[in-house]
Length: 429
Ligand SMILES: Cc1ncc(COP(=O)(O)O)c(C=O)c1O
Image (tube, rainbow, N blue to C red):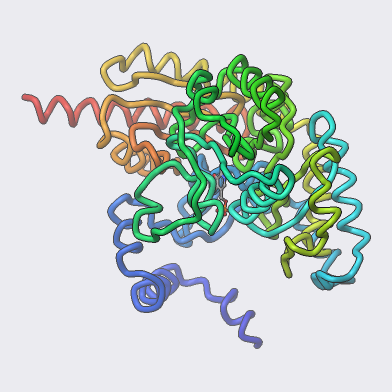
């Protein structure tokens, strides 16, 4: 038996749990493990399939977090997994300094499916790295330094991405950060007009703030930003790391407003949750800097043969199965159920919002988000509050979720809200 057969062959859930918790405690982070346990999110993932994940002990949960939008095509999508297996039979990652057919094919496909004149792709592995590429492209092209970004935005925690993230808790311990980032209130065009000056290279935002609490940008606001950027010769960067690939009911969230950014950042679902890849897609107009310096933004593992083939299979699955349309349809079903709950639990549910299958429910105070996550887990659903705003719990299932599964999740919300109401009543009586 090989080591891997040995690991995969272990089926005793108690032994797996004990060993995993020990390893986390000893070799990863005992405090992180405790926090998972306190939040009742200490599921040790075993089987993963479609919209669901199973704890190693066999308990099934509908996954409404999906790693904040990694698994749009479902957990272990058979076509995507099959593509990666076939790719592995012939290739390895490929040399980063080589010319790879698969990389060219994926870049061409992205140019076809992204809006407007977005054309060139630069590949990396994670979302934060791709944000860094966008920042570098903007600075390189404009020869200006400043990036205007949004309060409560989230763009990752790496070098040039971290300062753009709009919450101090991620940043304070690591000061001094790269300078030149300025945060403004989201959805406030006047603030953007006031913030842009002769040093501004780009405005960077998520078209729906994910970790900021599932807050959609108004279409008029996005159009106003586009006009402002055109007038001032400033670049517009959309971070579609969470909103991309069908999540909001369109292939890309930008399509709702018709606004085409100069750079679009993509990651998470690009390769279906089985192999890391991310990229910045940008227009030919702003490609001058990179054409003159093609090797100043490089990445050993960005856009490998395996990643690109997996991404091509993922996009093919999304298109053939109309995942954006699915997200719109299932999102509408969710919304109907969640609005009914809002009417029935008015003291607990302040708002229900989002687009497609990027939905959030807002509560009146901070403690309810974590308590709801706990209750939902007791009722077979995994969800978690948004990182920058614990009053909002997210509902971001796989886009292949079925009508029956949507109804199951809505029922779990109903039962969980009823339990929170009972707890609140016990506390006040
Ligand atoms: C909107 C957004 N941008 C960027 C990132 C950073 O991606 P990564 O964690 O892959 O670096 C995330 C991660 O959740 C994200 O949600």
